[in-house]
Image (tube, rainbow, N blue to C red; front, side, top):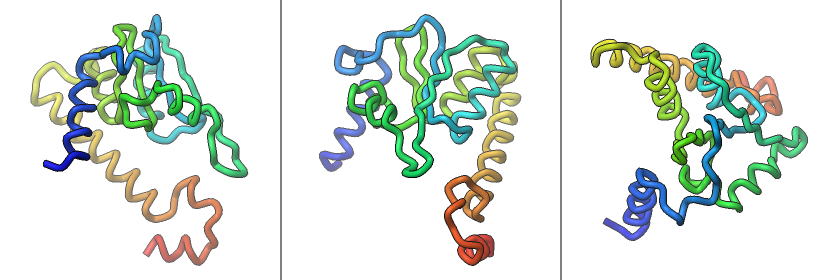
Length: 163
């Protein structure tokens, strides 16, 4: 195992037990979802929280449309609040002080926490299967050029991507 892999494993294992090294962000009084000010990878989590009628703090990193940069996201990376997710978004902060990263892990956490993940392992597997099919469809659409990230592409570039 190389040193980069070892470092990554140590970082990930430390995420299971919050420590002073990762305590840069105090625990919120209710769930807090942090993501960019667009739908993207956090939208399903927002929908699940709405279906569950759960109050939460929806912290959105503003994006400059001319540069597609986010100063508030850079600040969150610099202050360590995204460290538990390898400086990426989305993250979900729990009142228990845990930071959860990765959109699908956040979605499964919310679904389980609020009773939307089935009553048996089989029901959970079917729900998980449907969620993965949805991800496949979204990924395929993005690969074919149906994404906000493709607005700057010419029609020829979009047509090539859709082949």
